[in-house]
Image (cartoon, rainbow, N blue to C red):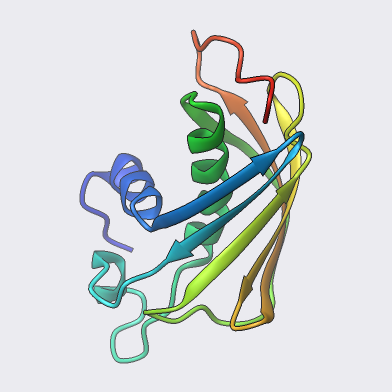
Length: 138
């Protein structure tokens, strides 16, 4: 997949799809809208585009980052099960649990679109080097 700006471009594209966020102690729900003109669709897959799985993994990081106000990084993907395609124009709800206290966090996430589970993820997320403690309300 060709990505303008490499990993930074991927992060920016995925974060730019975040449209809503609700958080409470240790859990959050975020909504992402993947517009049909998203640059990643040009190469994934021509003629039959779909949201890359890495965008769903990145959605977890982006939602946590926005909720706590820190720069975060993905440390590990412990489990990723993609069970339904996410298509251009789809709105995806990402429900994340396990982000209480200070990072690193071992989080579980469920990505849902059109009432159907599209992915079940388990990831480890940590603060970038030199970041302060997160907002304890997350």
